[in-house]
Length: 197
Image 1 (cartoon, rainbow, N blue to C red):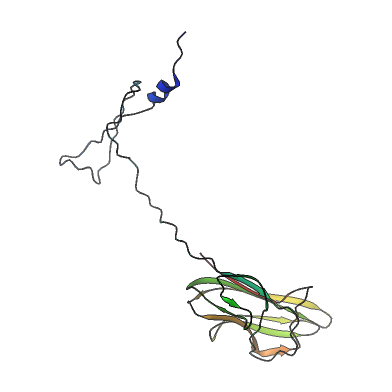
Image 2 (tube, rainbow, N blue to C red):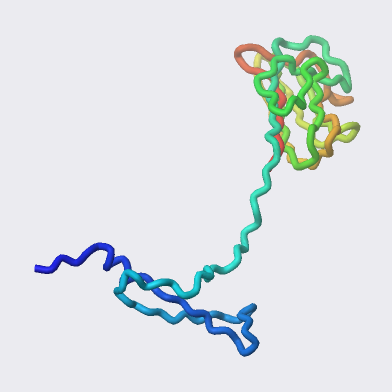
């Protein structure tokens, strides 16, 4: 009984390649035809060591630094005035250090597209309109109006282009500012943002 060696089985699959060149000896831009030699000789060698792969059409992945923040108000704000910048003083995430809890302003570390979201909680017959601002321009607005004895929250989400150094913040609108903005362990008023890759 003859046992076939695994090596010879592998060599059965080896092929010798030969690229047929065009008349001037160049094969640039010319489809290549492969001739095979199914020799079972383990000493067979590949006569042409060129890899016959198509060039990649995929673009290289570009990496940018991660930028993200999330902060909320520690307590309810009483007597909010018009066009008042809101401060979200408890910072849970601040990757890239763009958010400044003392002012409530996110200063973009890099130019790009960002997602920003803010939630305002109201209760007890209060109402507020709040704006998402980039420098001095309103980019988004939400309005929350709560009836007597009720408790509500409203959330705004914006996707926008921001330049490095731009200020992004939430402020109260010139109209519709009655009562207070709630934030407690039962529900937080918050501000968050992150850069899209």
